[in-house]
Length: 528
Image (cartoon, rainbow, N blue to C red; front, side, top):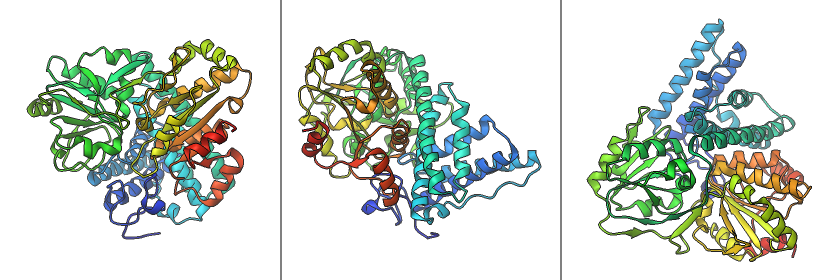
């Protein structure tokens, strides 16, 4: 499928629910950057194959693959030069590995071979590739905290190498499920890294009011960057506010102890162009989801790690956030308190209901189920996005009966996390378990409840209603399928890269179904 234009269909917002094939993607990624990311992917596949032929496994190879996969995720890197530089580093490592083994390096793989393959093979290889990108993001975050798992690292390389093979549905479907299995271990690793480093999350109410004075808004998922920023802002008079998926940071004891960590700014990632416009603050992006900034605030945007955008100041590995702090001081912040309410008008949100908190009251939860006080659990979780129809999740949560509990995580919660759903037996009906990787917490809670009731997870009064946007949602979905979770509702649209044939397999084996209407889906899930 060689073409002068881009081909990308990895996110939920692809053009016409088919693919982005013009001069730029819906996400704002130019065609030349999309091509550079494909070239980087092809170079990583060559590195993985060269290392496999040489029998070489080392951290340098794994780090390049993790960095490269993460770089190719949606809304991470818009800088073609940065992507090409990473590709060149991958090629250099490929040459070095081959030379040390006395072999010839494997040529870069042409990713167009995947895009132009039989539609079911293309679908499954895409499912594997995009899942690997999501898992790599979690491996990256664990690595910066000093945690890594050889099983994860080696699988990422091995699975990439397998993408260059002809493949068959019978071989690729198990590989996709293996991505889910390995991702479960990677989320477990990241959970250990976060809790060991920052403490166990605890329920915390977070304000959405910005106090007068200079401030920085930090977005993304990287808690390590937030910790460094908090250390460097001590004594400067600069306040720090989380944005998007950084919200759960307020629940970690080692982060919330900093008095300059004040609250949360704005709502989900797709609203940033409106919410950042004209704001007298500095913005630091540590991971996805960065959108091409408007001219009104582009000079105030800083990137770090694998995130990059042409013209925006990039903070390198030395992690000197001095320029970010100086920009905040120059801009000065607001003169008066300023509030950006949630989409339902709320002005506070609560987070921190990770597995440790929920399991600490497991007896109360079990008793409430047995007494009939709790009739059903819903996991309404996943990514937010701009496509019309995502108000489904707001309406669904609003319509849940008073004798049900809603668990949530990831940025899709911004559709309803400013709502007050009340309590059941002293427990809040709405519990935010954290970032997208905290799907691990949700899984552990489900497993614990199944053990308490001596049944399987699929036999619990538990329904999963998920939203997706990017590739971390893909690897989490694969994890749920690996665990044999049935009857997941997925929306707002089904992935464009899932072919009708592959979808039939997922429906037949797992009961995956698209969302319809809140009323109809609630009635079905509650057996009404």
